Length: 372
Image (cartoon, rainbow, N blue to C red):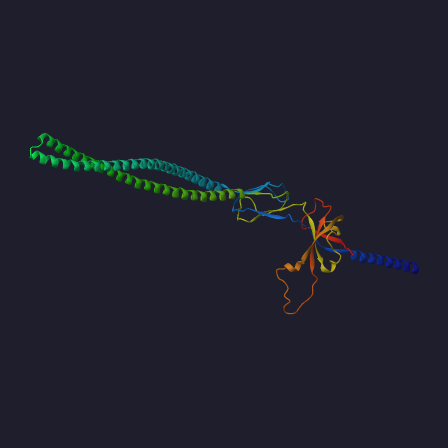
């Protein structure tokens, strides 16, 4: 019996030695960690860009969604009323702008015609005034000569050297010339008055030009007002579009934060959406285990929920800073007191053979093959 007991003891010692040696070799060739979790880069919180009352929620937690599918909707009645009001204002302003443009075009056309008419009339009056002045000057020269002739005939008539009729004829001719000069001077005054009237018309034409300028300013002001209204309309249309919450990718609803008819603020979370196909493993690996761990190393993965399965993967990234680097309360070592702690680095690992029942947040264990 003693010999059998010794043999069993030796066998047990050999088994434990073998297991111990295997354990040591396994840990030597692999970086092992239980601080691993299933993660995703496609976990997003969806929210509205506007505030309002939710009148439609189409999905429950765990439901699958397709990209572009409607998930929730905010009541758009107020937005639609505002849109209709602004649209009517724009239409009314368009009619006003069109009416003022037609008026401005008509005045501008009338100005062009009137300007042409005034120019022609002015030229004719200047020519007529010039001709009247020439005629008056010529008649004055004739009248001067006629006075000389009349004075000479008067002396001859007193001496009975000519007949009375000849003297009277010369006197009548002078009177006719004087009357013609007076009539022509009256005509010249009328022409000058007409020219003054033309000057008044030119001043009135300048006033019409100022009216066109004023209309142009009014139209520009209304167009600026229209642009402001169009901007407001675009903002309202954006709010209407923002009232529809749609899925940004194919995935599954991980969390629904609100119920129907609830009033929510802009940016408040409505759904959390995850893409179950975009999964990876994140490991908090001790700095003491980083030796030989490189990008591309193969990995064996065990999910805590499925101990009977083995997944494989590959190291994709080793983040350049430790997890403690981003702590909200960093360690203060300025006093000189320092306790050295084991730092952990995040290692991202791809999953070669994921299964549909993997869930974000599941715990895992990994064995990362080291390169020596």
